[in-house]
Image (cartoon, rainbow, N blue to C red; front, side, top):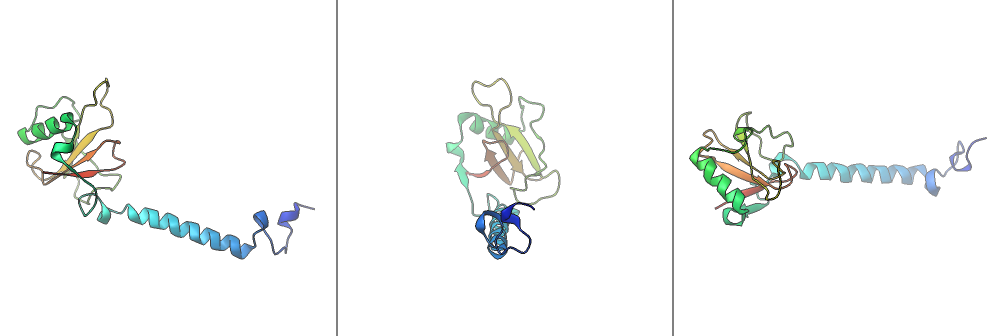
Length: 145
């Protein structure tokens, strides 16, 4: 016979909702998910009217890394200065090789940790824009003077 809530031809479906109510709810959910995805689009990335951090507000290790970037190194980690792919698409779009990543040490850790500075520009020692992340690329803030 089947479950009473799922009888064929019944005006009610799951949890007492009609199919029309259920479909309206699903449509609303999809619209909200779509709005959330749109809010993370590259056009709304940091540096285009979003979050910033002053250079003086960076942790001391981040300020030191910014100095090393402008000097061209030397850097502590082999990965520092390598191309950052912007796979998360949180930074403004640019050609491959435009962004480079640098490790910002976290006191007390024996590994690279989650803090990074990502800079963009044609000449690595003269970046056009640098971004700070303390959550391993989940969010970025444009570094301003």
